[in-house]
Amino acid sequence: EVQLVESGGGLVQPGGSLRLSCAASGFTFSRYWMTWVRQAPGKGLEWVANIKQDGSEKYYVDSVKGRFTISRDNAKNSLYLQMHNLRVEDTAVYYCASVRGFSGYDPLDYWGQGSLVTVSS
Amino acid sequence: DIQMTQSPSTLSAFIGDTVTITCRASQSISNYLAWYQHKPGKAPKLLIYKASNLESGVPSRFSGSGSGTAFTLTISSLQPDDFATYYCQQYKSNSQTFGQGTKVEIK
Image (cartoon, each protein chain N blue to C red):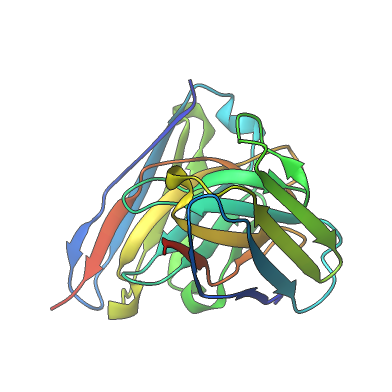
C-alpha cells in the first residue's frame, strides 16, 4: 500500500524557517517525480514545487522562489521542503504527492494527509 | 505560466441531479488535464486524467471531456458522497497549476 506521511509542520513567526518532510513507502520512490501542494485556510489548492527523480530538475511557483527549496533523499525514501523567510500568507496545509509516470507530465496519483504550517506572530 | 479558470465557484444541486463544471486554460494544454475531488480534512483524490480517462476505482458517474483550452467534468446522478470541492489541474508545463475550485453543495 502506498503511503505518504508528512511531518515537520507547526507554528513559526514571520521571517522564520521550517523544514517539512514526507516519508514515502509502498512504491519505488526513486522512480517518480514528487510534488508539494498547499491549501491556505479557506482557499483552493496551490501547486508549490516539484522535483525530478534524481533531483536534477526543480520547479517552483513564483511566490516561493528564492525562499523555498525542494529536495529528496532517495536512499531514505524521503521528500523535503525547506522554507525560509516565511510569510503570513504561507500559512497552509502542505501536501506531498507523487506524480504518476516517469516524465513529470502526469497527474498526482497519491497524496499524503497534509502538514499544517502556521506563520504568525 | 498557464492559468486555469473554473466555473462556477459554487454549485448547489439535489441528489440525483447531473452537474457540470467547466475549466478553461489560458493556452492550449492538449489533454494534459486532471480532475480531483477534495473533502475537508482529507487528501485530494484523483478522479480523471488525460482529460477524459477515469481513474481506477472511481464511479462511472464521473466523466471528463475536452481538449486544448476547454474542459468539463460531469457528475451524473449526484450521490451524497459527491458533495465536495472539485479542482482541475494542468500538467502540460513543469509549473503545474490548479483551477480555483468548485464547491458542490447540497440544495
